[in-house]
Image 1 (cartoon, rainbow, N blue to C red):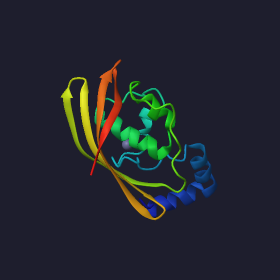
Image 2: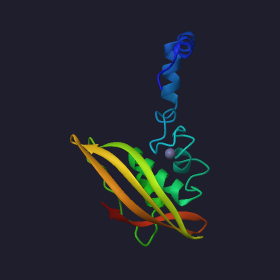
Image 3: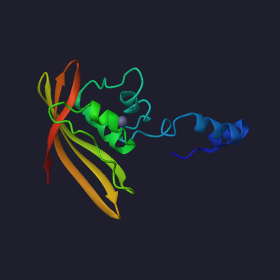
Image 4: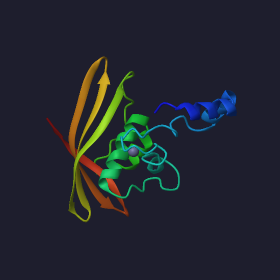
Length: 157
Ligand SMILES: [Zn+2]
């Protein structure tokens, strides 16, 4: 969103140095839209599951899936490991190749298979070295120890 006239005027009144200071004080991402595309700010969308008092408390499989996509974008590796079921969790995660750009997430379907099992089908788009990449997956999630966990997924065409 680009600032409209009145907002710009207000900014001028506040003074650019204050605005800059404020941006510096906040986490640079706090003000921007959430990578998962839900419209809300990152802070009020996936960010609250990444850190703070609600960390790891995503209430359903789709929300957890979205928060994991956002964690990939934000390179929150610890969060990804902490939401990965112990049976399939990798030892560690490799950083993305430099220049990888995430373009967006589309959740196609969420299915609750049982009270403690769910599937979420999604498409995540990215671009690397000028080429678009599309990751289409149906992920499995389980509910254990009072929260949802990512288990694994099937890559779809
Ligand atoms: Zn989000």
